[in-house]
Image (cartoon, helix red, strand yellow):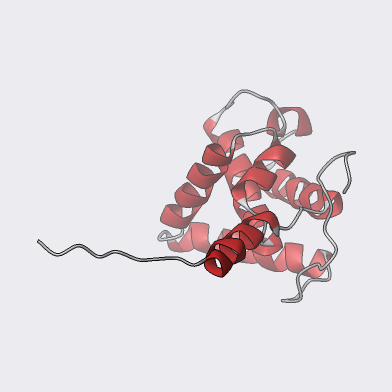
Length: 141
């Protein structure tokens, strides 16, 4: 039986650690814009979108799409997106997986693609993602 052993030196460990700590913080404006856009497209009231409970299937799907867009467009890690939506990082990870799986459906994929375009246009992002990102909410770093 062959064992594949990889030895790391101190600089490799420091590089990996610095990558983890450099995770971007989501802009409150970006997260708010995505939530608002998705709420309007899916016709979901704000109180249901931000509810701590799952809610109806349509509400849950809208929230999953919003978390997906925040993660993908903002290039934000799951934990930070979760903080913006009052959810755990594993919930965001599941939401992204659900949206990716559903993108096999051409109609759903078109909807998400159009939402990506709307958010990028409204945010003035067009491929140039925000460089200055802060915590979602009142706390800033």
